[in-house]
Image (cartoon, rainbow, N blue to C red; front, top):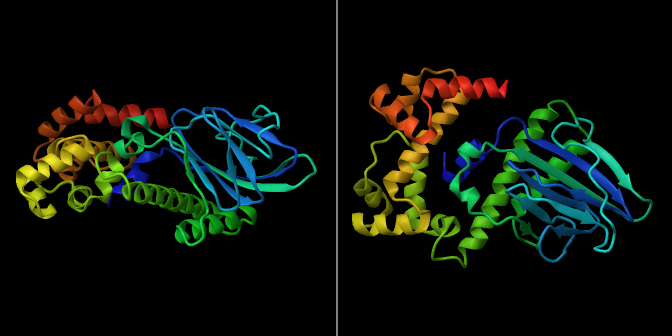
Length: 310
């Protein structure tokens, strides 16, 4: 898997949620902060205003996407002057909030709201580097794959058919990937000095990251990663550390142990097999490294995580 695919794979816990909501003016809704979640809103029809907890209101039109990677609070309304109603349900628990009509009797705005619960222990640093709010306006010719995913998702939610649960869950992953891709590509065009946008835009560093994520069990060294990236050992180490924020082998170890945590939670393979899959020659060495990173042994981690998830 490549870096962004891995970000999607490890970022959420449980099933994503989605709802198609039709608002009629006048309307205004407050959405409280959802710590430990990532949320996005998409305008399917009409227009509205996004009201961040800090900063100026932002006008939204059809196709616009607003992504809140850290679950911050915000408001939506037909006008910045419309009072915001308090939330009437828990988005993650109210299973009836799938296709809902709210508000007055005026002009209609249809929104698609989606959300993920996140596992903070497995949050990739690329997500932590994102701003509180990302607005991707629907510009003609920009991000056509994002628009296509939005259209497909809206159709599945509006008129569910056989297999809709699986299709919606998969499309939410696709939509999330396209949002992150669009953001990092846009930022990488003018952010050449540091941070994950710059790291993913840098050919040498992105090549090394791709190699690590596609084969974390490989016995990578700074020398071999530098050769893969087309740089000398010293030049590669310096550039990788500057952009990623960690030296190459420190990042490699972190990613191996994050991958191990996911395998312990989501599979029933033995601890010895998990150790092998992430590049450790012995279960003992793996156990020591895992405990340094996560604070508990692999076996106990599996028992604790499985118990909390059930």
